[in-house]
Length: 205
Ligand SMILES: [Ca+2]
Ligand SMILES: [Ca+2]
Ligand SMILES: [Ca+2]
Ligand SMILES: [Ca+2]
Image 1 (tube, helix red, strand yellow):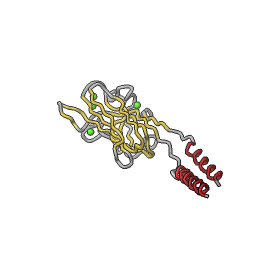
Image 2: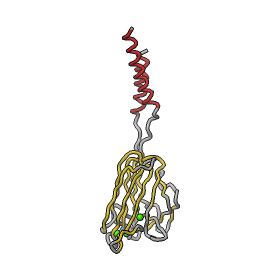
Image 3: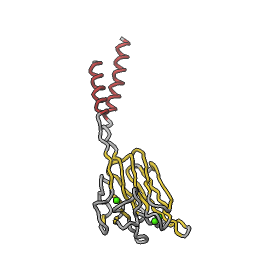
Image 4: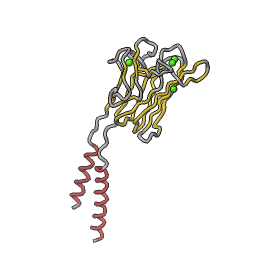
């Protein structure tokens, strides 16, 4: 009997430890051209969709390598053609998110904040910068990220302008390995408890 229990525990432990592949996805938009449009809700790579249409530019206004380079995406709005806020949604949770955002190292001062949320819309992490020198990388690490909001603002005439102007590029994320079904570790724990109970019964005899 005890042997059977041990075998079951060992089998479930092997299943838990089975290697699962992390999948790093990087989106640099180089397959697009200026003038292209991607409509809201399209999978732009790795199961990432955005809440609004995006356009692309390669004329340098939005480029500050390495954070943004080559073809750079932006979310045009009626107020600000050259890039406003954008939200993203992941088909599967990620535990690492990095986005390059900003524009060329002149013109205005940009205030850019990336916030990552879990499936309950709780904040997993934030990353932000303010500068007039160019695009930077925003990076968030944390389990269970299923969406993000990239808030792009400008400081114009000393006032924070909610209608920012900046692009985004080089989105990287790590799709969290699919966890082993919860029933397996639970089964193992259950078997262990059963085993202890059996041993206690044997001792009592
Ligand atoms: Ca690019
Ligand atoms: Ca700027
Ligand atoms: Ca904004
Ligand atoms: Ca700007």
